[in-house]
Image (tube, rainbow, N blue to C red; front, side, top):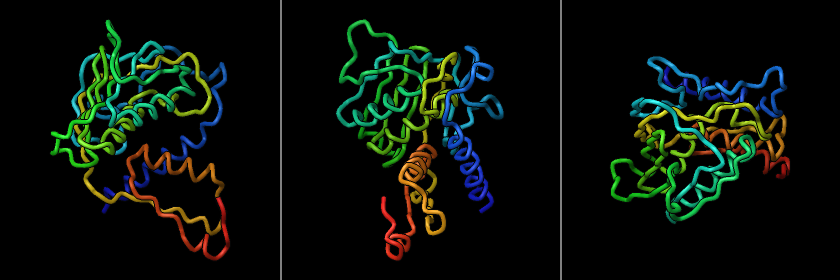
Length: 231
């Protein structure tokens, strides 16, 4: 019970921080080129929420750039495109998603479904980051999606503003992660009966839920039934 409460508190703190990041930092506060990815905890483990079931630190970093190729099979193509869209606004990198790597490619981010990984269940994934590339593998599409969310958290926090951020080293620490959710039902409820949030707020709320691997969204149905609230 205490662990669940702590998890909800941490999610709330992260949500407030992300909601507040709407504009590009000023020149005085802009991060320098040596900015590293997400803050680390004990033993240098990246601060991921929730913490993956298994995580092993490697040596070095993978550097993100506009020259990186994103490769995905048919099952992972939509998720790969979501990743490319997520990072475009803040990094300025317009990455194209393709079905196969071009000849001579060295740095690749790859999304691949492997139905043989039954031990991962429907939402588990394997994520490997080396200086040469990134591989996300899962038995189901949901696993690829949650692996992509972990990859987003591994990037510097300057990734999340909706405007381009300059002077940031877009690097990802080398790690090997195998993760499966501890609980099948991981939900949050949004009660709009008092302040009537906007459509943009609700969509942002759902995006933040997905980032932290919540999988059930409950909206107070009385709002729609009693007040005719509309999106």
